[in-house]
Length: 146
Image (cartoon, rainbow, N blue to C red; front, top):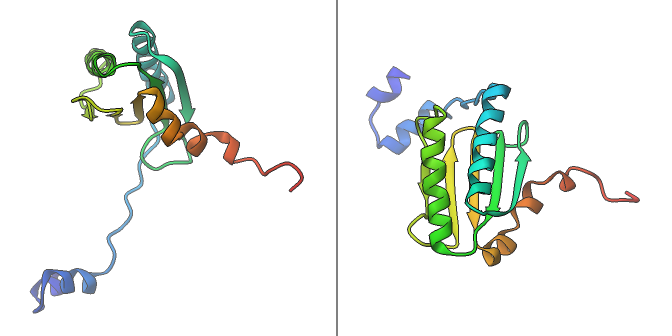
């Protein structure tokens, strides 16, 4: 690896000569901590009158998170308030880093809470993206008669 850094050529050629980077494997979250965060999230969403709250188990299915929470809000202000309240309540629960994308008024807000990813949608956007169908267990089962 040190020889690759000294070799002549562009950074891209040096990276190609060094070979692929090792894969980073994410460790699964502690189940009790994970369930505590999911409980905080669902309680906060229920308090904010979110509709159709769904929790999907992604353990062993996705490298980016162990749980996905999907909920619907009817207006931009409601969704923005849900995201803000979630950030505050997760911080109170001990989660130090919560990233929010799209809270400035869009049909879809993504909240990355580490091992839990939260999607807040307006009804039309939720139907369009259909994350429950994409990540639900229905796709794991073979079709009837196959």
